[in-house]
Length: 294
Image (tube, rainbow, N blue to C red):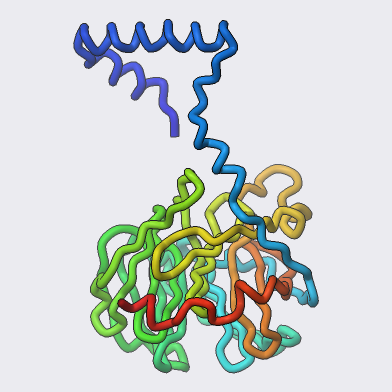
């Protein structure tokens, strides 16, 4: 975030030569503007060339509007969610098809729940700033505690590793046994910064990532970190982003449905969830799952 105070302080600490360079740069910029010469780098046009992935909504179901959705996944025809905020964090589950059988388990008040995933018959939950992860059994009985550096945002898994986001443009590949970081992958492509990566879902060599404060869903090659394309969920989010105090009601939550061969998506405090179909090229196993573990 821009701060005038921080800017003025940094300027006052510059040397005379640095100040002269700043003045010269300002004069050059004025010249470029007055002569019609653009100071915008030519490769900035790449930002507008990110492949747009089409989708179609094939089903719509109710979603609990009290959930500040963080983790979102499907296990054996049940949808599991972690919901965040201090004093309000919880785990929830309900039937994929109709939302029935809703059950929730409150978490301690000092926990801000973040990403959730299910690997090897265990649920893994990360926290925002506690730098702590928890392993639960299938009945949500806590079995193990881990510690990590930095913040925790999103969580998913491959066949052998967990994948965690921390609000940056990097994905960490985690050993599920001790939560050690085995690989860090920087997300790149199209001359853009891909930070604020949030909720994650891994499927067939692609990591799908929501971005905080955005309704953009990103498809990421889990081997290279290259962005393959984006899905614009603005139209689905629009009804929930009207009025004041709605900036956090963003799209957040993507879960692969094996039954429907499609993705369920939802958002924070959304009263609906949507089953969307995307082009087959982004669903077929075009990237070997094992490659993400090299």
